[in-house]
Image (cartoon, rainbow, N blue to C red):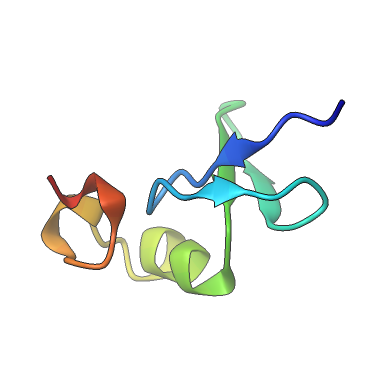
Length: 58
């Protein structure tokens, strides 16, 4: 049975077979549900707490 992951940026569940896994040089593994979440975290360096559309904004 495939295990569902949660997005490292917005906190939504990722369906098995979808999304993207990013591994940093230090070995940290990040999971993203969409390119929107990936770009906001890696390229734009935004914090999910400051955005209203993320579940981690609480």
